Image (cartoon, rainbow, N blue to C red; front, side):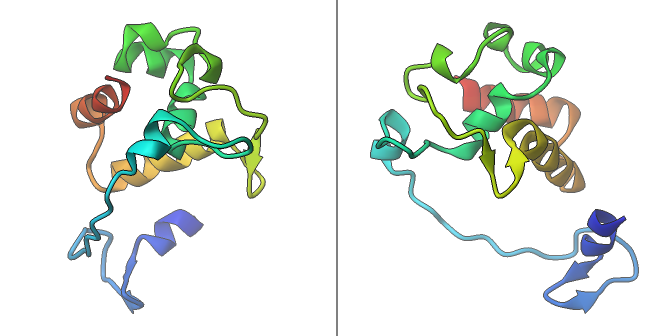
Length: 120
């Protein structure tokens, strides 16, 4: 697949297999103002919307209080009229994010721990 093929390259160099052999890390400061509020036609951090668009069974596994919730259920996320970004829904982007994290071995209990940290 395209995703699998893309995962076999690092810094433009083909790798013999798809093991993580290096990475770069950039530091970003969380802007408090982006977490606690946002202007009209803007959204806070995309992972919040993706997580809320995840399947109900995934939401239940991460945090029981996510079940049957939407953006409007959380004050900091709030209402949004944006339903797609670059042709993909938040649910589709959730799946892409989950798959990318799985490539980095963030799955099962690690994924649950990470998503719980995002929730609370």
